[in-house]
Length: 462
Image (cartoon, rainbow, N blue to C red; front, top):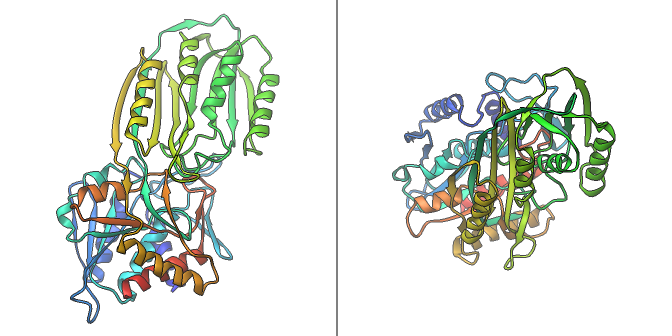
């Protein structure tokens, strides 16, 4: 079984599928459906539903929706030559762990899709509706625009969390905040230009790992700007909306010796956060002395904006209630582009953050978009308890502790999909163990893949 799932994953991994560029992976699933004589429908935003008929004697049972997303976060190391537009992902297997070669792995969500292909063609099950959504990794808005008439049923199992033994029944909502401005320029009073690169702070998923002892490379660098006499002409930082920024590149002007200042910055990061590999490079370069005006006001606005964990839940132990990830800040050709992503299970908290941004950046252009609903299931419902019973049986067979019902600060498509379906709709999310999602350190535990496959098979069989 596991060998066949991995073979499916290898086939999928040969197909380029970055967010917004899923035409090839959509064609893959269309062809796979045709090869297996499965009907399918595609809506106007490229979500696809594949209809898998019931197996023998299961025609009178209630069908189940199984749901994944088709895209991946495309991130690579600086020294990688990988081209996400044409290259497949190179999978590296080391015992029971798979990783990729200096890129994201796409276990999130490809290993689940490989599982779906196996379940659809090799297991005993009622009718299935395989819902595969587009561009989940960029604000999940394609789930919000799903043509729900393609789906007939109300029980949905989402396979897109990250830890074995967890059954997720709630996830946070969020809003995207774009901030921009065209700066006026001035001639710097400082004579020397320096290119600075800050590398290898610890990063991760801004929903799952926002409460870990890590920090934000952008915010750290703005603390450096606030504490030193410098002008700024260029900055590039951040790679993906749901990834914590770990590195940046900047060009500054100063008359001071900045090596000692950067030594102190990196020392503080290493001492205070889980970022032992953080380092920097600095080199003097020849450049005209034109820099942005009002750097002090920009620095103040950024540092007055709360980032990281803002509030913890007062209902669920160790659950982040509200956070904010400053994930992109670029200044090039005198134009600023900055993006924040606050998450919360409280509408009031999100409104507070929006108001704070309006105040701090009152002289900037601000746009709020991609607002997304949170989702909360009844953990005591028959649906959830049936899933848990099956899960615990499989875990016991593998000498593992029982499953836990949890809530996530990360967003899941369940929120949009339950909202798009009708009132009695219910959803749950389960997943094998994935570490470092959305980073080049992403890995997937194959033993956990086998366990989750068995949970799904047993649930569908019964």
